[in-house]
Image (tube, rainbow, N blue to C red; front, side, top):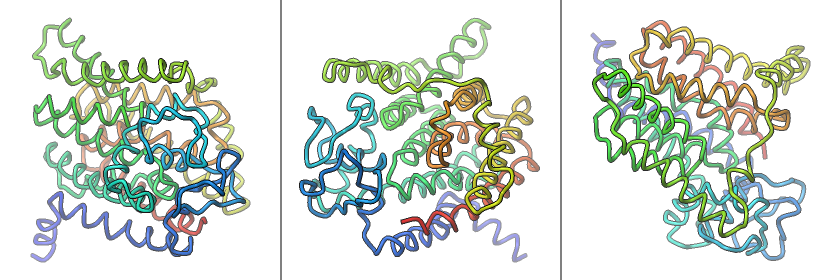
Length: 387
């Protein structure tokens, strides 16, 4: 009787979001304490592109660091539509490429109400709210598939989100909008889906794989004369908006963002195999971290491949999964320097894999949730100590 009542109580998006809050808030609090309760240290401001004497008040510059992507998002939050590469003591290293990801800085600007000192807190706060939204949306998606809402926690516990949250980057916000778009698509709210997916693309262009997958699915449905599940607006609006934004930025900065930021490619899975082999001895803590992350990725991809044929998820998610797997498999050596590189990029692959798994049978779902939760816990205990 008690278990039945507990199961019923947890079978709602609000309950799943509350569980995510119970898990993430201690991580955030511990991370803040490690950083001397200075929320601006999540930005990781530093490196040659930052002039400590000119940065706005409320931003702590860390001289010993080389800086990280968070400082670029901070700079764009000061003026999301800036036309200056250098301002406020911060130089945007690749303006066209960086500014194409305007979604997160724009939300930060809105959330901070234009108060410069509030921007670092807004950056962290948005990521916290976004991961709770992912938990709630994931629960709603699980219920759409006819499963218990707790299955949706899988999306929120992606270990890479810990890294994004600890350095104020955009992957969590992108994932929230992408999953919300999928939820709207399942409910046949196609205009809402198109708007949400468009914002996901403007937050991180890798979400474009979903729009392209929807377009391919639409073509397949027409060629096979099947019942049309995909409305053209769901992919046309994100793709058209992305193309228009690319052209605007190209005119402004003199280079197409897509060309400015596309990395070189490697042979499929070669870099993953070499990174895994280097971590396999597990001689120190960092090697154990990397080994665990490599195993986690391999297991999640394998589970998704195993359930793909029978999953109740639409064909568009199979296409998106294959596209994201192809991208992940050919990432160059430079991405594999640390987990802050590859785990953040793999967020799209994880989301598409998780959708396939959530749409499958119970053994795969519970296995994925247990492995993801375990990896999340293991990594959380490491990341919060980083300053």
